[in-house]
Amino acid sequence: MDIGELLAFKPEQTPKRPHEDEDDDFDLESSHGKRGGGDEKIKRMRRIAEAKESAHYGKQSGGSTGASGTSAFEFDPELTEEERLNILKYVENEEADGDVLDEQSLKKLILVFEKRNLKNQEMRIKFADSPEKFMDSEVELHTVIQELKGVATVPDLYPILVELHGLHSLLELLAHQNTDIAVAVVDLLQEVTDVDILGESQEGAESLIEALRKEQICALLVQNLERLNEQVKEEADGVHNTLAIVENLTEIDSEFVKEAAEQGLLAWLLKRLRGKSPFDPNKLYCSEILSILIQTENENRLLLGSLDGVDVLLQQLAVYKRHDPASNEEQEYMQNLFNCLCSALMARENRDRFLSGEGLQLMNLMLREKKMSRNGSLKVLDHAMAGQDGRDNCNKFVEILGLRTIFPLFMKTPKRNKQRLISADEHEEHVTSVIASMLRNCKGTHRQRMLAKFTENDHEKVDRLLELHLKYLAKVEAIDKEIDQQAKDPSIDEDEEAENNYIKRLTGGLFTLQRIDYILLEVSATGDTVKQRVLQILNLRGASMKTIRSIMREYAGNLGDGDTDWREQEQTHILSLVDRF
Image (cartoon, rainbow, N blue to C red; front, side, top):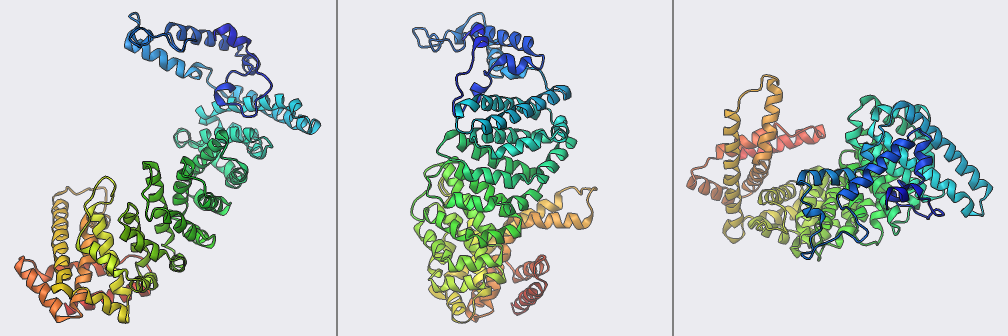
């Protein structure tokens, strides 16, 4: 299409869902000329047409090719590689050469938008039964919404968009009868809330965020989500862009995490995941947003539990009990679901729901099946059994013969390969944490069954414990040496430095070493034969019981900020084990 044809182009009667690349062509003279930019638009279109022609770009024949099948464009001797790339870049970014939006032109554009919005409303009321009579006004409205995207390149103008009620009018259009208009608004909002764009103007960001919060943006987005049909590509894109808006808002202001959940998004996400539709990119995005909503906000975890979210997650994960994900994207989806479940289990009430929903049985089966889901199930068990709230799950796991599953994993760490993404250290951390939690929480016969495991087969599990102790002790000693050699940072005080060093040691292997040594103390306190075996191997390897006592005293002194009564009780218990050891 040459420049003359471009300028003469007039849209046909509005198609139901105009594509974005068509929108730019609608009535060039009317949409830009009213702002005094008609001549500039014509010149720019001519320059683009000439650039395309000189680059042999997009010929009607589909690009001429020589006998060798190579386009003439690629080997034009008059064009250098740099010139060729510049022309391509220029053509692909046609709008980049356009006028930059300023305050005056934005005010004019908002005025045009309001007029077209009002005209569309009037035409819809006047010709309610004759869509063909109001469709022209709908196209004009759609076009001006596309033009308003220019404001996303100048965040300093956001306060004007808010003050002139342009944002308010746009948000009202999320409920427009034509979903194409609503989807166009979503697309615009996704661009104006882009984190990088908002980072360019603090005043603009604050003005926009405050206005969106006042309008209850999340509730409006959810209402629109409820009616979108994802079988239609444009509306599926609208769902994706809506989730992108939420992600942008939560990254800019963490308060939106709670607000989004309360305003219906959490319920919609669970409904979307529960659906029987096959895996698609939107399902993946839903799992990511759900993870964001419950990762740090305990009230959202409780809300998820009250909406049967734990059951929804278990149902979705059950698919991967005997089948691995079919793609990398689906694998990421599965991992997101496991992460959501781990976050949910940080709330005590959800552990009860996990227990009654037979979550333990599902995780146990996954561990036995040796599929990709085994890694996630081990992490979930760790979260379900940890601390005093994990008591019921620990006892139930022994009842469902979980010891037969967990101890083989303790005795031999599975080799890592492309499909088993968890590292050996992560595997050993979760396994030892599960065993330590069961030793702390199980009582009576359940505890006796646990302890019996450490004396069977000539104390092989005690030998394995000490093997792991020596492995992680060496890791921690290496970290300690590294800390001793590092230069002191004068900008941080001693307490902060000590805390940073302790965190570094924990992540470097101390966390797992503490679990291993806790198990050693528990099993040594219940049988002389176990303690003798421990002493025998320590002496053989030139290791010391003093080291184990030191590690556990440090552990008792750093139990964290949980329930005060529980912390004191736990400290007393650990120190008594140390004294008996």
